[in-house]
Image (cartoon, rainbow, N blue to C red; front, top):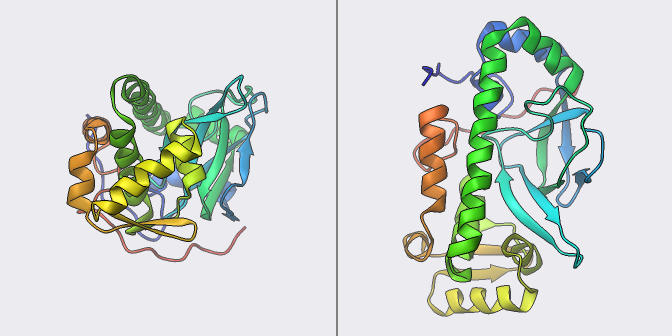
Length: 258
């Protein structure tokens, strides 16, 4: 495991960008573009050429969804400020396999794949960092597959809400019943029944377009251990990247868009 340097808090609030060495960051800094994404914005559809990497910043959150023959999209993983989406280890211009959307809107940093690949060619450490992050993403996919196979709807509901809460830094998670049903791969009525059960137990409350976590400890007790497994792998491979209760950083405004 490589030793991680202290984060650079003067950079965009994305853990990958903040942990780059000064030399590596300067290779891509001139090509970084700050944008604002809205919830439900589409970044990629299956088959689209992947030409841009998106770095979620602060509480922005993206999701990978796999379309199915019955017309439903099933969520596979969430990606927040701990990482990036789109062409992480590819050499660019490959077709997207999944649909990638913005789950929670906010600031993002964009970088063209060609610029990232040019920087990787100049720096082994930069290339290695993105390869290690890709390993963490793969671990998330593996864990999600296992979770969907063996854990109950209630456990998975608690897991998804906790995962979104960690990345948005708030007990008020901007998550609708429809979005939750997509995460779980079940009908909206089923997801609503689970939420009603949690409400009756005093664990959650619902707001317009959001879920309020009232009892985090109880929610953790109802969750499976899949989030913990992913966090442990992140700590082994990229220590300090995954958002946690004990490692939250104050959110500074991003520099103006270039």
